[in-house]
Length: 290
Image 1 (cartoon, helix red, strand yellow):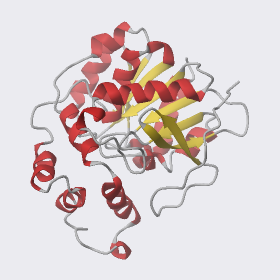
Image 2: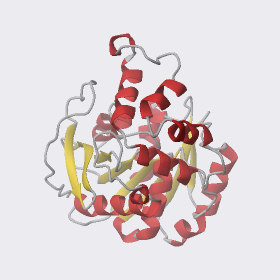
Image 3: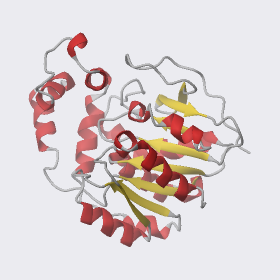
Image 4: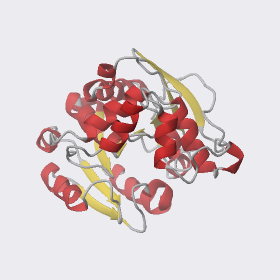
């Protein structure tokens, strides 16, 4: 039985329509209100899944995937992390540290199912965050999915983004234009839906979130041993052509954490969009075991 907390409804972010059956809710934490997508299956739920997005992402990265989790029988919540899009954004860079981000994930997990442990999925930088959350409080989780994520970062990985933000005093529109030259300066009506949503998100996201995330992604600390020591079941999975972390590193992370390891075919760094059916099948098989 799943006793999902009664979170308040909040407005959707951006211009894209919210799929039928996907609720947009607010989750109130000490940092402020995080926004989230929530889905609940029509029949009995297999359990509760918490999804944490990546570096410059948000819950909107999971907009079209949430119905698949629901249809597979899962109650699921995908958050926008602090500082992302329309979630609360603290004004200090220190408030976007890995420890603070991980603490948010633990707090959300504790609210979802009357304090019972939940399944945990983290994409890219979100995978780093959920690993830290699981190490902080293993009792909050049933298992951990490291999705298109890696064991550690490397120096100067985000030097381009950090240089642009430094030179423009944290102007994320300049960062969008620099990294998306095809769409730079063009009106909304000329942008494809996905590009327009990304620009809307850059405009709303806190520069502190991006700067702090970049530094986390440059950190060479490997906490695989600490995650393994939690005793939680772990899945490491990524797209067949994922280029965000070297694939041998991700495979080694699976070995070091004692994890299952699955490659999702015909996908890059966003298999939930590029091969959604293959992705939900991988998640469902793993989560159903625990």
